[in-house]
Image 1 (cartoon, helix red, strand yellow):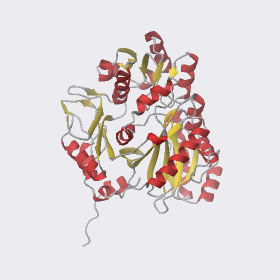
Image 2: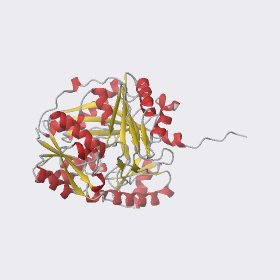
Image 3: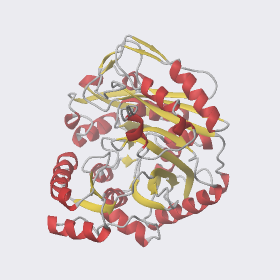
Image 4: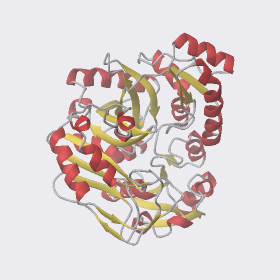
Length: 453
């Protein structure tokens, strides 16, 4: 087992990894930018190293600074968290060269699954259902026009590398394709350094379903059931829950087996998530991508399975076998997560600044992962996520009730947050009845239709 782990991240996920390490008796090293000098992950780690200025490209994305911090502190492993360098095959390769264990899949698997068009081909070969689309990146506008015509409109353009909605455009007619293609390529180049894009058939208002897996270096892979992430805005998830209200036990078993077989086919070891879109008219699931890292929403799976995913990540990275088998995985109850962002709840404008008052909700069935506290400053340099509020209940109805109670008891003053928006969503009849899809927020945010004269 590792003696010391460096966490190449910040905020609540850095604290989450520190919690797991403390329970396992492992020393931790925090890295921080100048903007995060007084952050809680710096305070609670055993050691801390400043790796650069506030700009992420000069700190949290700066591989030489992170490797240097690991070497001078004697860390024998690096946990990348999520975001930043968590899916960097380059960082994983540098770690190998420096004899530092990267807590995640190997570089070849990260690279394969990170190139979305290659991942689609690999999954199709492994027997996973994929959306009809181009066979790799489109080389020219003429190629894109031909593929789109074969698929039939609407189509969606996606960046071959990366995600989060960047380099993504929906095209509903041939006249829109040229401009959308150029825009997507520019966005992909700016965000990921590679402007390659591919095309897929676009599903109107699908459900977003993802499957959590864990694998070890001995060939064992298990799934921990599914999460539903359909409530999202501009491809950014807002609310996640486990399990999905529309997946039956039989579907769960079949979907899980398909994903486990696919993960074994590519030699997957560590935590990972396979994401699907469900055609609500047929119930058919289509693979869209795999994330070779810990997900923001991993906590809801932990609540319904009782399995600590971060601890398992660390164990398998140290060479141990998974501490459980598929037969040991039992899902119980229902869990919901609301992402609390530092942004205006109606305009969605970022709202960094100093927090004047902060009070965590508590009570039965509530978990909060956060890095903020009274008098903390939310810097403008990074993602707006400041807390993950999770509820657990015997069923979905109780989980919603507990989440509403917890949101009402949350106090964050000095900045705007998304708490009021979440309260409105949870009061929505469609959400309460699980009538949700990726188009939910479009309907939810639409201005009310004026009454007829």
